[in-house]
Image: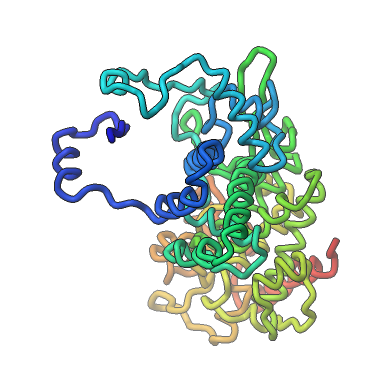
Length: 462
């Protein structure tokens, strides 16, 4: 059996051959899982073909899934001259459509009959690029493919599946090694379709990092097909003025979640968002935004400032993202560096909604809780009591590098430094810097003001 392997353009082929000859290339866990799934369809060539095609299209997690299929395949799966609607109802439907396409293909050479000369001379596949896509790495996603498979598994089974891709094979085994072969077959068929559906929805309704024309920003975009046969990326909810649209609000909510929990195993918010769009027949911006805002309240009040923490799975799958706990402990906001990053990010989102002067604010990865009045002031300045030092009013979330540089400086020196920056690390910090002096009264006053923003929002659940 001869396999044709594509390698990056500048690969040292001699070195590559030496490595392959000595030790081969280890399969990734998701590749082993794919082989295990395909084994279920070993007697059904057409179903194997469609399942493999779906898997390969979805595994390129950075690309919109439509580009994992040929133009003809896109037309039958995602709508003729549309590519933005999932037309098929299950994997059998997809298989039937793809089988008809295969029969109409002019090539008569079966893969098992292709000569060595034919394989060597296969043309390079150059897919037409969407309008203005001047780099193959235009989008970066918030997740990897192995972890994405676990999100799909959790949505399909509605079981509390750990989002730990190191356990990928182990977590799928109970469903693939069932003694009832019919159940296993039905599970894999359903998973194949759900994988395609989730990737299609993920591309459309979950943020990506977009690199375009020398800039990079969060984006929430979908494909649009034009009569001129061009394809471009447009805002998912179709607003032309990004900063004033609901598309922008949803983008802010999703990026707030993402930067708060960058570790893949804790991306429960992503599972909640995927579950919502997966189960909602007709998605509109207002309802999606309401769901995400309610989810933020549930995470905050049922997890982070609660005397009785509710599990993430229960919040998402039992409570449908609605806050239910009333045992709130505001004292948990006065815990210094122990306060969850999510709390600061959520507050910044609420302040962004409330204050128009911060309309250009964008969430970035900030992981260091700063004491605005320092824990260890530079020589000649007095320390303040720990209760005041760790008060919510004296804290904000900034990047670790900035905190390490200025950690012992007094508020006035920090203010002079930060105000020279064009970007805003924290809206809460900017509000703190509006004070001429920073002492006990200002800390308490600001803390109460910020808590009022959080607590007021709790009483406005949609």
